[in-house]
Amino acid sequence: MEPRLYLSSTTKTERTSTKSTNRQLVFMSTANGADSIWTFMLPSRGKICNSERFLAKGNPVTIYDSLMLIHRQTNRCVTVDSKNSERTEFGFEFECYADRTSEFGKLGGK
Picture 1 (cartoon, rainbow, N blue to C red):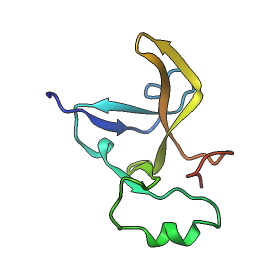
Picture 2: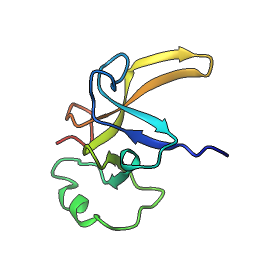
Picture 3: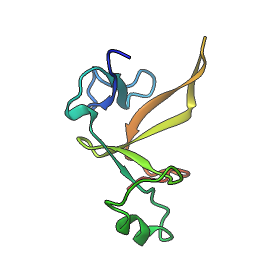
Picture 4: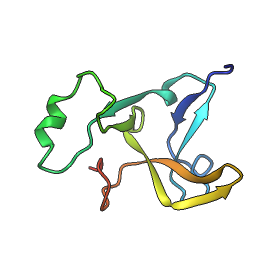
């Protein structure tokens, strides 16, 4: 299918942020550049997975792994807040953004 779309993100400004929560926007783009480079990492589960996360760096990813998708330019993880939803003709849509917070229930915060 043409055109190809790439998952992208850019640093948050007053013009490039999410509509309702004013966070770093994650979007689909036809441009394949620095804004569309992502890395995978195991989620942090406190002291339980501390060494496993470090030792897994560079290993192949399997379909059964829980992963975080991290934007390389801004070092922020893709996340969705289920509280910010909007009903559309396709069903419920959630606002997708990139964030680095560590809140209850988040697996990848600092």
